[in-house]
Image (cartoon, rainbow, N blue to C red; front, side):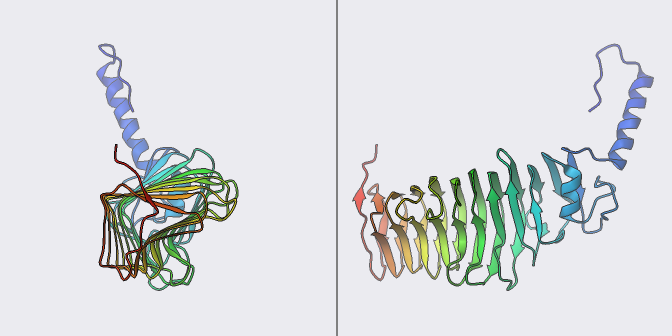
Length: 320
């Protein structure tokens, strides 16, 4: 920005400064600033509004650490690339439409990736749509991710190997996996921990819906699912599982509907606690299930009915 010292800047200096600033805007983009991307752009361009680049890979290299990438129109913007830096990717709903691409996010500690407006439809491809490893944070807002039907395919696989955070809001995960995969899968690796918040998320027609698996780490998983719809998944709608010596898992389910899944909500293994508050578990093959020392607790204000077998909570928690 042009800094103007009050009362002392001559008009000629002001006009000269503005001219230089406008020239810089149309020819260069500094690392850490905003860059622009368009389906009509070119990767030989400088990624400024008048000369946008064409691929996300090019935009990432120009934006640098902490930069912002702004989508100007609808395009796939390339496929099969890796994000390894803090960056914000800002697209209006559906402008980043990657029909066959997969996104790998591998971050150092403290890095933050924020993505808004992504449509990633696999159109029958086998593989995980978004794979997160490393550390840092992923923020995903207004995303639509689906049609990845491989047996172990997932819409989002969050597999950090250090402290990591995941925040997803106003997003849809559909038709991911046919066996062990799912819509949103949390599976920290050795040394990994996960803090997860899902809000206003629909997870529909996957293998598993939302799954937390602590068997590959001794670090903890802490997850909240709020104001969401988990429906029509061929396996569990919401499941948390760990092994002896595996990561402790705590899941809080608030104002959420788990309906028409094979199992509505399930808790498996020692050091797993799932708490359910103001939610509905209806029309599933089995509504509630806990085993292997897992706890499935109610605040006493849930609707559990019309399941093939309703099942039961393992205990209750008083409202305070």
